[in-house]
Image (tube, rainbow, N blue to C red; front, side):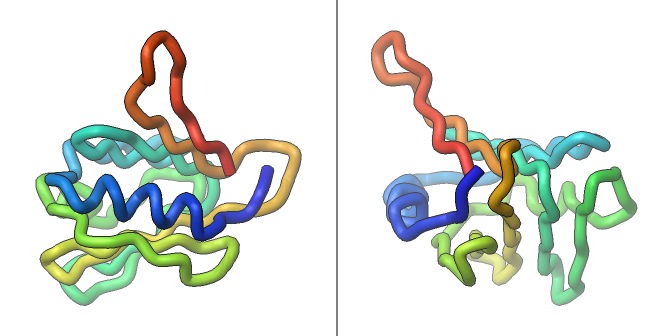
Length: 124
């Protein structure tokens, strides 16, 4: 699909002004999903994390990283590291970075709360 832009960063940071903690992490061979209080992010490319000072990577398969340690952590801010890499920082100092690529298929889907009868999604 498309690369990340400043608009998605601004939107995420608006959500992070309110209490947005990680409710759940779902690892699968086809994707990585992180669910916050009000929205979710489904990732189909690589996901990188810094948890307790150690680096981890999810790449199309479950692995032994301590991904559950991100649960209940409060998101502090989002930052665009490059057009293909978006990072979310947590109050604990941990972080997660999500990769997107330009292709005919979606790499990252942001599922936001519905507005009326309409689903709200941003697809990269």
